[in-house]
Image (cartoon, rainbow over all chains, first blue to last red; front, side, top):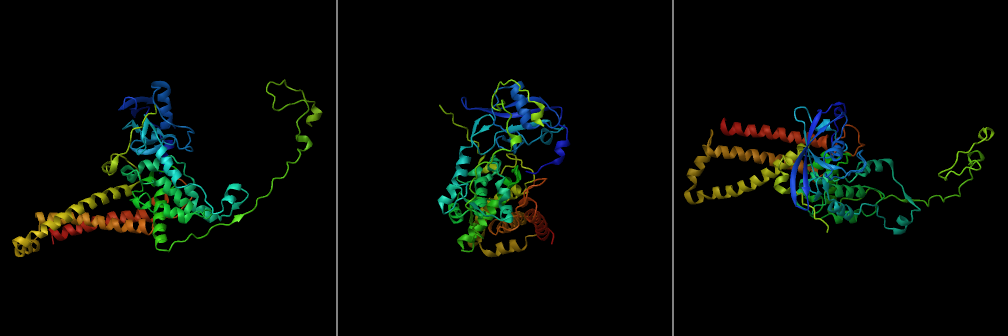
Length: 304
Length: 152
């Protein structure tokens, strides 16, 4: 998602109306509700929603955690675009001319209640692509005594894909996912490319054959909305095109992974911990773990 | 009892509705929508074309050929050709772009470290220029077709 550096310097309208799409599963009822919120400079949409929840209506349901764009929990459709509520400033989406912000749950994810969506299908697809390193020798993978060599440029090739926080915004923006449940979606396919391109992974053939179905990259129509909404600049759209091109070459017998990295090790054995130097040892009579301890008077000569 | 969530899928038709999702910096989505619409229209036009070109087999070819050859100015035939040309030009030009990007993996940029203003590499480099070129060529060729049909 493109970042507007000027948004941080903008001042939002003093009062903004938040139009929130609500859903009650017990009554199977869906309706829009308006809340007027007094804003301040730097206020995010998540701040505004929490203010509504604390001061106006306690019944609004949403998911959030870190409040700083790391956990990927607070994905919502804000003014028609999937965004992270904690990264979206009110000044970015509301103006004096139109002091209204619409907040809806993410599309393509089933809604549980109000703004809370169910990510079960999304994570099922994520799990299906085996998002971890696979080596032929299972022991070397499981014991952890070895590590795999990797050149900086090889790491650079996959670095942007490792930034994915699985927030589900790309999945929500994808028009193919909107049409069919079978498509794996941009996030899972970006993970496939991340491991196909990773020299430490040995299962690239199995991965390519696994996605050579109508669930895979051939169902993508490159609307590139996934890349446009990604808050971490992961570019899943490009990953799917790379995957598709690799798959065609693989079927023609022209694709081969450049390099499989060798294992390095075994790693150094852990040595017994050295004794602390005498000046770092705790003072006699002081127990650092005791909770209600009287302060101990330490003679000055011991401190010097 | 576990509550069942409400399906929130916009569906195929809604996915080409620009008001369902309003994503900024995403003209590729517009190209996707136009590609789908022009594809469906071309399929319909081709079926109609087969039907219409079958008519002179019964009524005689002379009148038909005369009508096509004298099709100048704003007539139903030239208007049909004009709209068909617009649909076909866009679908063809955008199809070439998609072949380059999707099947050959060209023009999608190289992976890079995220830095402000955080625009994905595939959305700002060669691919984006190619898309604008498609729109520009489409406009030029459509205007040119209109000039040939209505003026020349």
